Length: 309
Image (cartoon, rainbow, N blue to C red):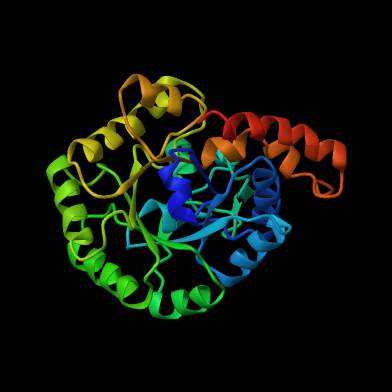
């Protein structure tokens, strides 16, 4: 059971990306990381992505979580390029961790909304559109497919939308729920008060708080990159709430070490950007799932990361 995995304090969660709608990549990632011992996967809330993950499991036992968000959340936004402003410098292509941009065009299925392209564009050619989905259409088909958790990205400022979506999720699903939250747009006090209100009618330890330090920033493997994730988890821990705590946002192979040094009693670590980056050169090969040597080389890398908890 997912509860037992969380109680162990050794829950490694692979974040395939709330905005990652590339079924081929998701199947490869799940196949690789489940073989490495990962038993918890975060997925885009689409039936075809859940099916791709199940294919990737190849019969292995694991838990699947789908992520949804409120308007303005970076995890559910997609980049777009204004071709009249684009100077064709290709810096956005070079920095994109998902290899989403080619010839100044965005392949939206692969875009995870990380904002790295925006940060290097000096011509103001890049903006974002919010992929705000109607949960009444999105979630029922996914629940029928047998998902194990629903995560709401609740880091935006709009309280009304946050609680409206949260109440709806609670009304249709009685399993584990996860709240992904950060201090980006919220003060520490408002973040904790929001969590308290969201869990007030839920059973103790039926909710995961994904403490998102700096969303989608884990491209480097050092202590500084993961510092904000540990700091956010400390705020959750100090509030003494009846929840499971999972570190995310800038997480890497140093996260567990730093958390332990800081006395953080976490239940799991969710890793996305870094976990995908370290195997990207293998995953992008078309023969990845059929080339045993290639797969095993990547497996050595992922096994080390999964065991770092």
